Length: 468
Image (cartoon, rainbow, N blue to C red; front, side, top):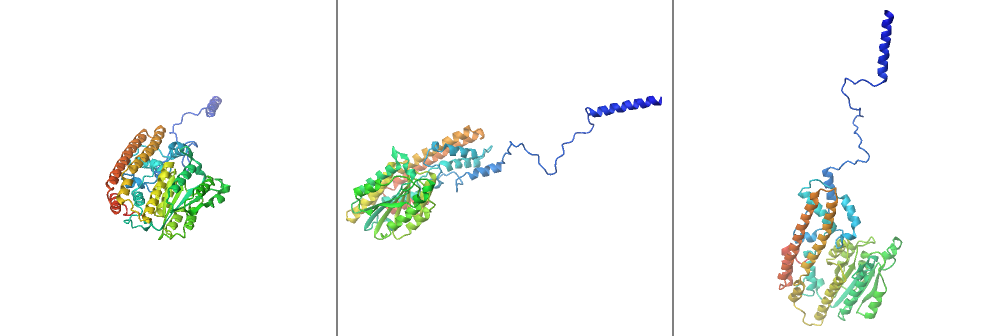
């Protein structure tokens, strides 16, 4: 009997052991989570990036805004002083690769409020905001139209015994770009030749070119950056000599603007401003590329004894170039104008020719046109209004394209493109309205004296009377 009990116990033990070697029975205890190392987060899959927070996205959007932009511009002065877009004066089709990179960097913020929407729109303006003529520049244009008027208290704009013009021409490689079926360089040469031919015989003209040696290659940079040559020394117009001077160079190299301004100061150093009316025209289609400081050089030129009037002409230049060239003009208490074609360049030289003819009349004691007639000629047409309208059209076309890209990008909420389109339409209507107001103001100034004209503009726009 005892043996049977032992056998039964042995068999029971074998069953238990067999069960342990196979599937374990369900546990009566609640399952516990896998043990984790203390203070250690569970790693995300390698291909899954953590989405940035809303605060981080807004910070990224702010980083894309142009420097100094705090609100969408509304008044004429705000529109004119808004930072020039990096691609101003160009078409979006020229920069599609860069613009796609910008879109990739643009954060997709969900449920954007009005403040965020305004920032999105200002970021787009940072790309394409055009260089609208500001009130200060309008004052400088009126000064040019009133050159020689006894009402002008700026001695630079008073006629002196001698009349001298020096043109500084960009001969860097970018001037080989096409415009109106010919290179920008050829267009500039034709405009310069026509201008010089029309000067009074007593006037003096000089031509300096820069970047006309070497090439745009890094190996030629030192040579090209040291090339600034007075190809036609200051003298009376001589058709043969000027033609030969214009034919001896082609656009090739880098852009030493600062060095050229310094050399121009040397060219005119013996022509003190108390006895000479000295005009300088700097024509460039790009920024300084030789490491110089053209703003400092312009200030030094303005403070010299020749007291010149520096007219800076941005010839088919992009937003970055416009910013720098405008700063150069401001540093010299001069005038900046952006032009896009050969006719614009011819028009600028035509203004200088008109001044020279007025100087000729003054010197020969002939009666000159009354100030009011000159200002009326400048202001009674719609050039300023039309320029605002044309720039607004270009700006809208470019920004509309960007809004379409945002609409197609599935990262962005659908309402973003719609709201940006609304802001764009509002901005365009506002710019056109300011253009109409500007035209009305200019028409009202036609019969006023020079001082009354300046005071009216200063009162309207809160500028400093008399300009720079």
